[in-house]
Picture 1 (cartoon, rainbow, N blue to C red):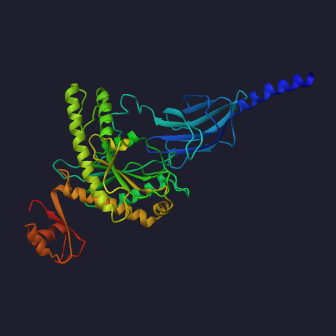
Picture 2 (spheres, helix red, strand yellow; picture 1 turned 90 degrees about the vertical axis):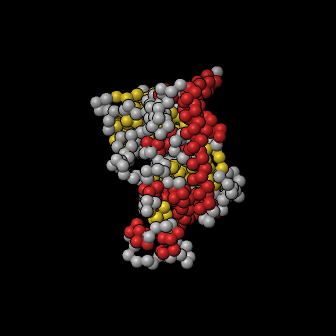
Picture 3 (tube, rainbow, N blue to C red; picture 1 turned 30 degrees about the vertical axis):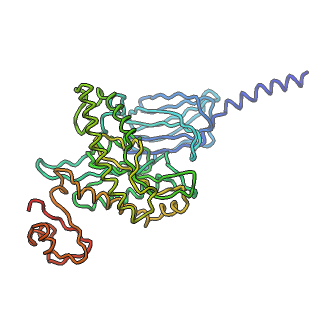
Length: 440
């Protein structure tokens, strides 16, 4: 009887002890971004926790019930982190764990649990945002504060290209068979594209993500709009369960995606100070607001389709295409109502051969060059009014052409061509681009 009683007590006790230590904190990862810091705790299972802030000094506290550390979390700030100074932890009330995030200033923390994916297990995520950022009323409608170069009145501006490298930080995107993360290769291609556009006269690049950090999909489109982008190019690498599938693709927004976005905009119009290129819907009745949204979306999708076709045509010489035509989908990053947007799937990272190519610097450069050629071709044909590109036409020298023949074709003088292109002689080479003054 005594043995049975002992066994019963042990059977009751040990499940309780096992449950008390059931949530294991396996590690922490910190992802600093320009406008927030994300702290991710790898946990063994969903946890019961409480989060609150304290002042003097400023800190964010997370109390996790029935949790224990597998290894110490104490660590200092990551390089470039402007919000998080230090992470420390201590056992509390025997079985509970207290984690303290020492911050540089008052923050507005957001927290949530994430289920396992192909890369990570359960996670507890804490986003540290500047106090006052991201209120429900303004987050969806007001673009974040950005620094935009302004030109003097009556001067010509540059065309702005927003370059969006997909995923980032705790979101690696698709993972190739050999461990290649989508977030890394698309950022490399985006940086190559940035350099090419920066060197282009009359164009200016804006990097939506320029480091290994996470940015929400809505925040990406908001940043493009906040910088008054003329085109947004989102760069990704596709994946599929069949490793034989290959090829690159270019997407624009689908009709269904446009319809759902229009409904979202109209539902939030009272909170939106600037939805359509500076036009507010707040003071418009429902019918007029609907018409304005439809007109804006139709024009934006048409421009997106034209730009996507130019990019797809340029990519054809670099890589096999998955589909020979522009495709349509409801990707959130394509839903900006007044910024033409395209999404480029550079290859299938799930295909071993294409995974190897995506890691190759030469391939990354060639893909960026192809996207650049397509973007340049689009804006040469359809330059926005008031831009440097709109003030001049361009001509690419073909075999057998001379400066005099080009001048005759465009009805300008040779002297005007020399002056516009800073030429010291009449010699030209195949592939050279000449600016043709439109006011000549």
